Length: 151
Image (cartoon, rainbow, N blue to C red; front, side, top):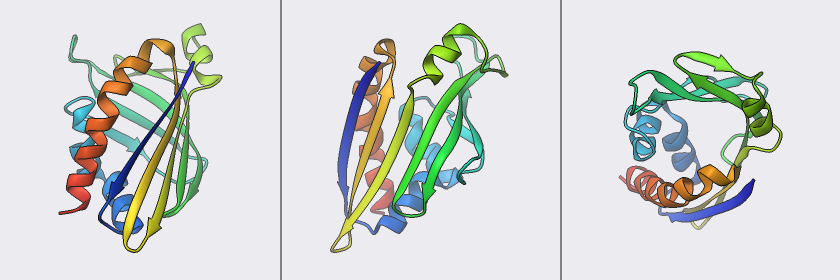
């Protein structure tokens, strides 16, 4: 597993950045950088299961991640623990691959506001295989989130 961190400063309040990041329509917009058609099913409250989904570019079938919201402090911090995958519309939290990932895969989002500007810090732990892909895509996704939040 590899630990990654990304930061961006956004000219907007932490409430605006939080809402832009998590509301369905704007979530779909900024996460399209990762995969066009990305969306989520579920709820952002602590203890809730949430599915991060989108069409698999190779097959067109629905795929993605099964996650739990570990912690949610509105406008300050949200933590996700990834517990499995969705492949062809079926949740997998029991396979060896899913269990290996679930042992240490997470994403934390920290919102720090000063003088009406927000520093968003993303900390994540990902498999070595996904690290390069995330290192390429996260900066572009954060630029997109910044653009939307500053509208």
